Image 1 (spheres, one colour):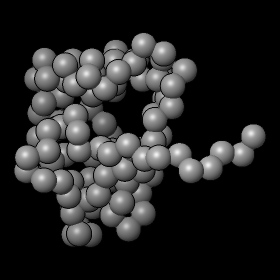
Image 2: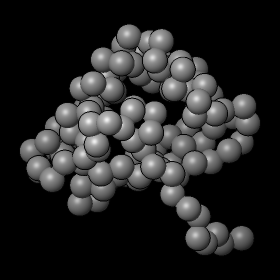
Image 3: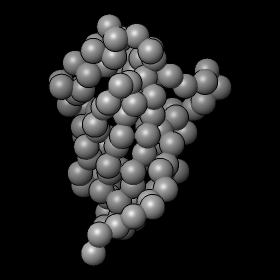
Length: 110
């Protein structure tokens, strides 16, 4: 199993942030299917002050490149990504696969 930790900022608008959180309380079933089909075994997203933190556990074969290809071929995922882009504080030139930025592990308790 692999674990990834990623971060993403939301737009500095409390109304938009609340709406983004509401969408994630009722993620579309097709999105959940696509996440699992890419090899994601578990995922958590936490928020504080407009900053998101994702913990993603995947199978050993998971790659972001493969997930990006699968997402690009899935119209429902593309629809979700377009909708979510409204809330996310990313550059217009960032593609969907690159907007979540990997974090560097700096400590682990054994």
